[in-house]
Image: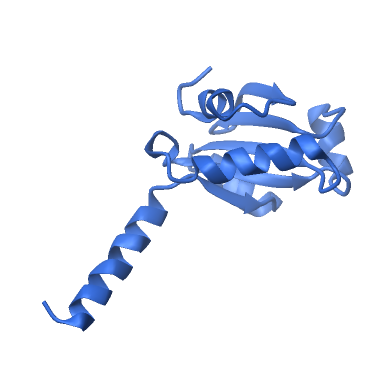
Length: 128
């Protein structure tokens, strides 16, 4: 195997690994709706940059990105301060809340949780 083949194989492996990892994306209504219509497990993470709990939750999500149990899960990071209409619609009263869906059906909510394993359990398809 030459260097070019090794680099190509490494790139393909990296892309395949990324495709099977937990995705954390910025919230947009269109992306969230598309994921729900595809019957994916999704979560809205109501996050505020000034919130220390939210930052800890984001660190936990980073650690969970490579967890195969969450390979088909997408978390949409919602700006708590600017997405006021969505907060009102979902009756979100504070930041650091996860609203987890299977398709368009709400499955669970996690409020203020920073424990990585508890977040994983809440996000896992068929979890909590």
